Amino acid sequence: MCYLLDTLPVCQDFNRQLCNRLTCKFVHLQEGCGVEVREMRVTVCRDAARGQCSRRQCKFYHIPIALPPASHMQTCANP
Image (cartoon, rainbow, N blue to C red):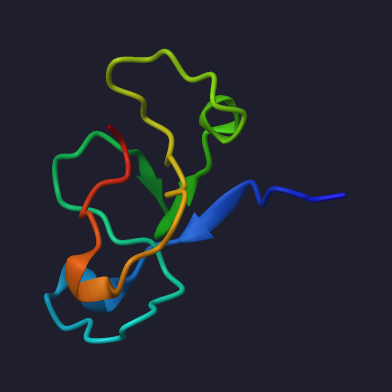
């Protein structure tokens, strides 16, 4: 059985344009992408995890299917 975490930590280095990790374990978000951040954490969208999120501007984090290297990672996981 697979369990989904409720929240994930945001990469503080990315926010300061200092993250150079190829496989960063923290969330990379671009300012203004609409994902709500509380105490440097984002809430995972459970609907998106099931492939069923229909929100146009979802305030929850959509976990990428596959993580590319950090230098090529989308800065906001919402479509």
